[in-house]
Length: 267
Length: 340
Ligand SMILES: Nc1ncnc2c1ncn2[C@@H]1O[C@H](COP(=O)(O)OP(=O)(O)OP(=O)(O)O)[C@@H](O)[C@H]1O
Ligand SMILES: [Mg+2]
Image (tube, rainbow over all chains, first blue to last red):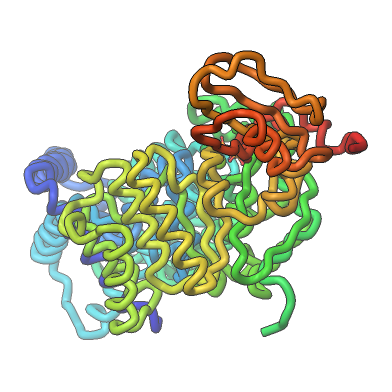
């Protein structure tokens, strides 16, 4: 923690570096906002047509979506450099993080700023506000506090996915296809309430690849939904922070082991 | 801190498992479990040690294992077997502490921030290594003086030429006063003047600050100009480790004396020195002197006594020629030396 100011300085430098390419920056920002508005729009149109999905109303769905995108924006802010970790490994660029008196992971976190995290933030907050307005949630102080704890847990789960998938690179060099499937395409699973899937997929999304904790379970708390039919125990609606800590720790262990397997490159 | 060598390398090996990586999702999944593999012994059981203040040339042909060794000494790679101690630390176990005492330059790859001006990279390194402001300014002034950095400081790294970038990278490796510098081809792609700058800079810090320097290069003139000691690597094994001078002495049984006469002396012979060969014709002749049996001074005296001499130059053999002979025939090093 003593090193925190250094990491902040590095992050600011990364932002300045991105600003060197101002046009790309703005272009990307608007492209992403448009893409996500489109995604959100599709969900809303579907619900508008059917009234509700598996008992989730329009506002509730927007909240579910908002929680996913909001936590994703923070995940992207922190773990952007892990998306193309394969490139860093293949070109030996990871070398330099091992040659400084700092821990490699926070250095990586501070090494890249991703414009899409701001785009996600805009979309996520809009969806959350829309969802909160469209339902009658009573926002007690406790709920607000729990919201931030849940977001932290959700970030740890999504960050853990990225970290674990990156760690695999230390052994296989390549992970691009895993990134596409586990980091990006997997989002489709939690676009809708996980309860629409069959039992085993729900178990998978809870115990193995715990994306259900990102938005589905904790939404029951915020939306005062009936939790008695949830997997295992109604308490699972509160378990996101625990799931986040456990999952991220496992990913971090894999990562630590991976670093000692780092091969660098021949040239 | 314990006395004794600054760097100790003991039976160090690093093998690489070469695999066929299969493309696609299933490729990366199945790749986790089964692969067709073969093993390359990039570094194969090497041992040596370095005293503080030494300037060592680490040479060998492409793929000999030089960079791999440096990566283990700097903590990037974990070896397959063997141990290393750098200033008492095991580099890959204490990466953070180790990084404070070493400076590293990989000529092929910059450690600087690609999109930021050089000056900002330096500032970042200052915070990262916690260099006190005053010390930082002193170092930067000295580096600027030696490497002419001032005109480059405001330029983003990606806009620098190779030679300019290399000078900045060298400076960057030195900002935190490392005890040891590991330089992996720091003169690659430099023009003659830039090489000269870099060489005199390295010589100076080695002498004035007693910085220990390990230099990998394919330019034997670098070695000739800088390194008192040379370690030669061949297919992952050390084939020579010793003084650069004695390597030359061992290999070089002949020196050349080139003499320019006033006019063509005709047939030149030295009847008293039958082992000295004479080559060439006209006013300029070359005498090959077998140094084991005849002194160069004797030859010069004998020539000067018989002919009108205008100019004399002595050709010392170059390390490069010697090393090339070793590359061509590594076994020649272990063959018993021929008697005088
Ligand atoms: N990351 C890696 N994966 C697989 N093989 C490697 C790797 N790094 C090095 N090697 C192999 O190990 C051997 C030694 O490589 P190294 O880079 O140490 O050579 P070098 O002496 O630095 O050569 P050069 O003069 O060309 O830089 C080579 O055969 C190389 O192919
Ligand atoms: Mg090399």
